[in-house]
Image 1 (cartoon, rainbow, N blue to C red):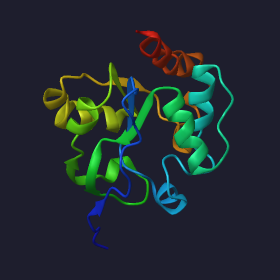
Image 2: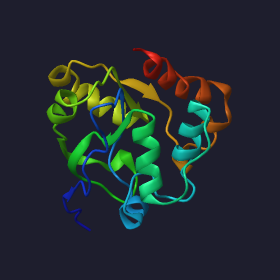
Image 3: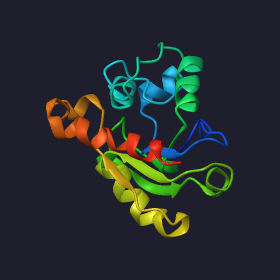
Image 4: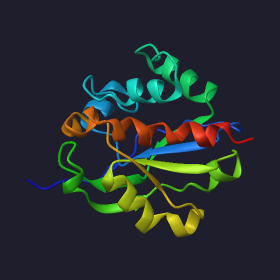
Length: 169
């Protein structure tokens, strides 16, 4: 079966107060079906981010999640604008084209770029780091496929790094 090229379905969530940018690789089929980032019911992104910030998890609707991000000065998007991918498996990604981050970086206060998972980190480093002037800060994936690592203390230690950048003036 031949894979077709998929394009990213949403714009970046950010505003002029955003201080950190969190990037995944590309929305999973479940997220695309849900209509927003990290929409798979077993993905612990929203729970993990709330814990890292010391806050309650946002309600399970898109509007509440957008408000949560913006109130916490967080921008959210993905590294890739388009690619070929089988299911949600980052290992199958080919024909990649990166998103253009110039508008976000010009119209916000981004101090750090965090990438969720090894593939997002690798792709940002390869395709975007030089253009943006940011080296990605790796965060372990919150995907259900990474549940073994999610039980370790280092998992949450890495996610708590987001607070360091949010606290910077």
